[in-house]
Image (tube, rainbow, N blue to C red; front, side, top):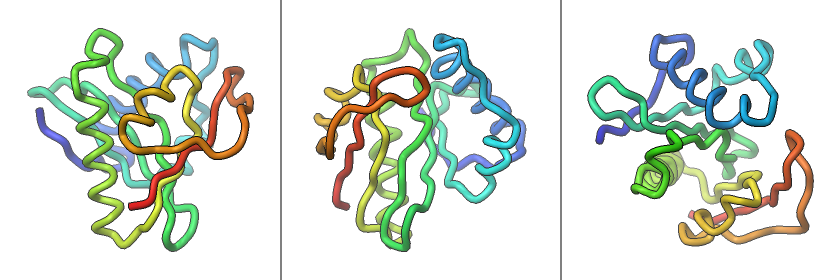
Length: 142
């Protein structure tokens, strides 16, 4: 498996958008909006590949000079639980650390809490609704 940074607007980015639509949005009856995608230009976009197939993806968004937010973590449904998400998270954390960030935050879906807790993230605050489903703010010091 190869992990790499994706360029916004590239063919790989188009693959990333499709994966996120298929895994994160379409099951909820939602779609990524063009203005939302446009705002991703300055984000750190990452993906896991096997040959030319994208297996999973995520992104980091700067929230403060020392903090990034993990967003849009998606792994192909039939490959979940096989270490791809863990590899992407480790890659994202290492990139963030290398770029001087001290903390990663996220809005984690309630059904993914166990995965993130195993990766060392801790819940902050109470449950809230986002894109029609329950989430928690989670964070981890780098």
